[in-house]
Image 1 (cartoon, rainbow, N blue to C red):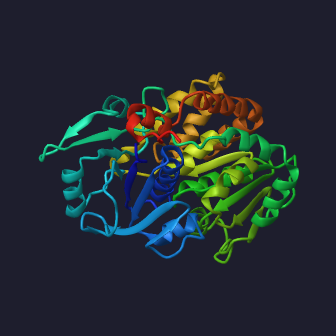
Image 2: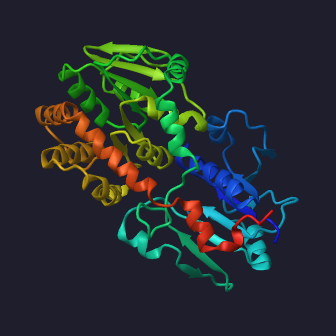
Length: 392
């Protein structure tokens, strides 16, 4: 049996989440199926941000053939062998030339959907959708339960995490590259990667009021921009990677953007995480660190249902009801679901940080539940064995 040919299509909407998931998916399909993977994308700059050494498109990089396309309009199909599996990531619209290929080659056709723990996602996982031309497109719903499409995870992830945790020299080298000071056991260190929002100014005020030393590592510009607009930091503060701003016990450090293959190590280095999007969100869970999810905002606050559907799983591991109440309220406010007064917000943060070991244990329990499940690619290859690597 010949090795399978996989076609993937990605349109970049959320800067790095879409391409981040698509690039991980392409690499894991290549490694685990033994097949040839072709990835079409519409934003080279977004890919280059997470894979800095990628050549100009079209090219082959790390075993993946990379091509350009315009969603719903055209795709560079020159020389591409007929696919055995075709994946449109996040319901992107395929151009007519690709639809013609589907009609001729009849590949396994998947819509690799946005991650959701909502009931409808589980119910529609692996269900077929009959198209007008008789083709069948299946929904692949990533999720957090054994009945879902699972989460992307590389073989050896946990071993790599534990090896890094035991390697003080590797941690020190990474700190120097990020422009971070030596670890101070009395200071909580928080990685922060979020969308622009007025909620960051409210968090800033609470963190300053705690008199608890906190170091906030700002990835990207959006949080710093939000603080600047709200007048919490000067107009010339935190404009470049490596810059710092000290406000009371709160230290803000703008860290450089790192390639995707180093991103996990940054998460492992921090004490707690504030993450956005989808790829960063999943990696935060695997990191076994306390975290908040700054979910992509949707009209009419539709994102809050998605947020609540997810948190019902790890929140069940928070055995302290007071802790669960504080966490839920802060998560809701961060994501536009409610507004707390200043004293209540500050006291909730104080409670979480004073009970940090319990928060850490609940994050570790949740990570272990996820690691005990099979990953997305394993489930896909079991569901459709024809995609598995041929015996050698």
